[in-house]
Amino acid sequence: MPEIYFVDFDGTLVSNSFDLYSEALGIKIENSRETTKRVLKLLKDRNILEVLKLKEKLNYRWELIKELYNEKNERVIVYLLSDNPFVKHLIDKKFDGVYSTIVPEIKDGILTGRILKEYTKVEIAEGILANIENISKIKVYTDGGESDEELIEYLQRNYGEKVEICRY
View 1 (cartoon, rainbow, N blue to C red):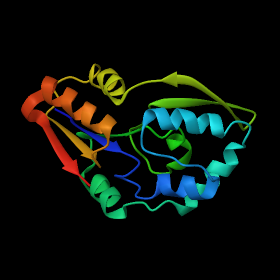
View 2 (cartoon, one colour; view 1 turned 30 degrees about the vertical axis):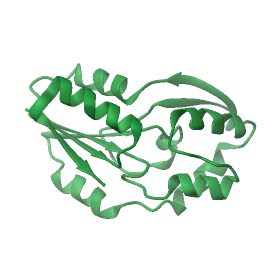
View 3 (cartoon, rainbow, N blue to C red; view 1 turned 90 degrees about the horizontal axis):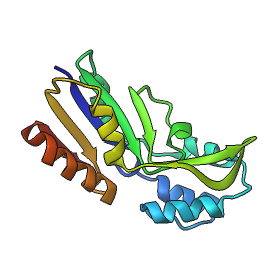
View 4 (cartoon, rainbow, N blue to C red; view 1 turned 180 degrees about the vertical axis):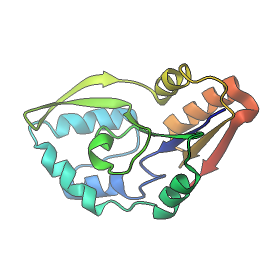
């Protein structure tokens, strides 16, 4: 019976990404889906490499990463979920899956400002959990963001006592 861990990227695994993007890219970013969509429009015609350079300046919570990998074994499956559209480009760590709620369009390395796909964390989790039987525990690592709270409500409603919340 597997244990599933859902880990939020911004605010939980990384402590400074929104501040870093705001400062380095000269734009105001708040942790909300609407603002993220607006930011993608502001980044139109910019090279994705500008964003990727920021990867080296992210403040990872190494104690959490170490904890996740100490617990990881054949029964523990760790998924990284994020409202950050660049999470797949920014994370070097080996998770079982890395999912963003917003997938930006990038053509020839240039951000077009358009969104290819958009999901909620609940929709992503539903898709993942639909393919896993006999789940023993679902652990959610969160900083308390709005999309995380929606995910937690969904999980508690559908999985009850199996859900454990770890707030960072």
